[in-house]
Image 1 (cartoon, rainbow, N blue to C red):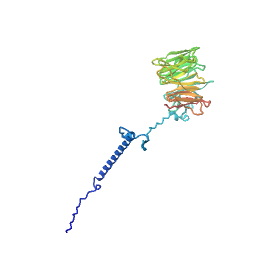
Image 2: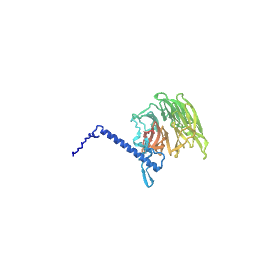
Image 3: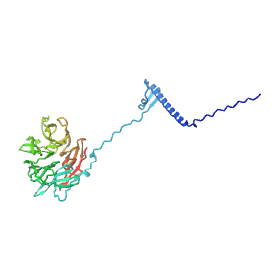
Image 4: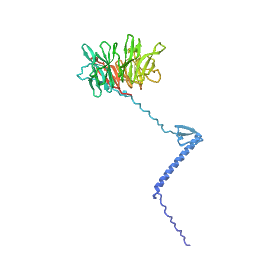
Length: 422
């Protein structure tokens, strides 16, 4: 029998996928699709489980799977659903007040006169456009007379004397703006002449505005208007306003046997304010004070009722300040924001206030020979003068506070400091 041989069949060799040029790319696609399919199955399975556990009729969306970290018990099985750590928006750090970094010792500046100016007493300083105007005194005969007007230039630090001399004895309450220099040319025993000069025309003959016979009133200058309160009789005081351009003087108010006749007016920004009797009486028998406010161009007067006694009110266009006594030892300083109504919501700043001056953002005041500033917007007070220095407040204007260092009484030491705004 012949042996039968089976023919060996040779199959064609299959080419390996790895050996193909498309192999790596195909593998990558398979891996990606496989991952997406697994994620979809996992999400679907989780939704089915949650739907079973919570008996949810409507399938939960993917973002509904995330919930609070909670242990859920059903048929003895624990299901733990986790939540990412919540993100809280951090609260911004409050911006510190500019006065928080104020250094009294490093901020104060002393006015130093050149040797040729032999003046040793100073008073009534005020700033205008970076220059301080103040009166200066020396011994004439047997008396100290404030017979010089000095100007300090903050930019250069120089001090010069203006070519103006009093016809009487003293320069009292000098003040200046862009156009006018006004002052009371005072007598040694009281009274004097209110005079005015155009700025830069100091060689001209001063204009006599009015002669004052009793007392020496404080002068207020705003634009071409000048105001003051003057005793004109035994029991009568009058509030005067003068237009320096026309030299016309008018009486705006009269006070008969009234303590308001000793209260000074205040004028700034085209408005004039002063204190007067109100028409309301409180339960304790006190009469309410009012602050009268007039626009000098329109002549419209508005009354603001105040629940304290008002003396020497001042106004910066937004806030009123005043004290509740005629500079008694227990005088308290108040402020109020002007509004549409006719009543002021008064708020106390400090007690025992000796003097004060309003500026744009704050009021400067002194208590026990220490000077502070109170910011209206924030309700904060800050010390201006250094520790262990005794000071007498003299003024505040154009962001600067001026005082006399009275730690030693041997000589007058005039200082000031620039105060940052809000």
